[in-house]
Structures are given as C-alpha cells and as structure tokens.
Length: 97
Image (tube, rainbow, N blue to C red; front, top):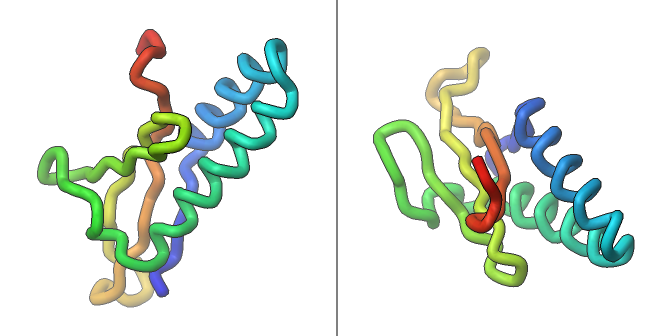
C-alpha cells in the first residue's frame, strides 16, 4: 500500500467546504467530509487509476458530490523507489478559485 499524505492546503480546502455546507446543512457537511477523506485515502491502492492532467499531478473526481481531488505521486525520501500520494487540493468546479 502507498502512503497518503494530505497537505495543509488540501485540509484547509475541506475545512472551507465544510464550513460553507455547515451553514446550510450540517449533516451534508459531515457526509461530504467523510466522502472526500474516504476517496482521498483510497488512493493508497491504485493511485495511477486517475488520469494525469500534467506531468506533475493527477485528478480524481468524487462522483457523488462532484468534488475534484488533485494529487501527485512523489518518491518517498527514505526509499526513493517507493512513492507517496500527496493530496494537493480539493474543490468543486462551481467554486470561484
């Protein structure tokens, strides 16, 4: 299994998304957060299953809620032959970015 690392930016993105949803529907905020974390952590197996969008990152669409998780595969420092998934950001296409 490949290790998954959530960057501070990705965690802040989820917090911002949940804060927005919490004002409108607290239960939806919880469901979306759980779905996003579950989807991101699932990248520990078969992280290359999502298409490359450039030479540096890939994007996973969380289909139930239409959020996009952008991530990269980077070499592990202790063992460069192994890779780590770095989740870079999370957003909804309807958001102003």
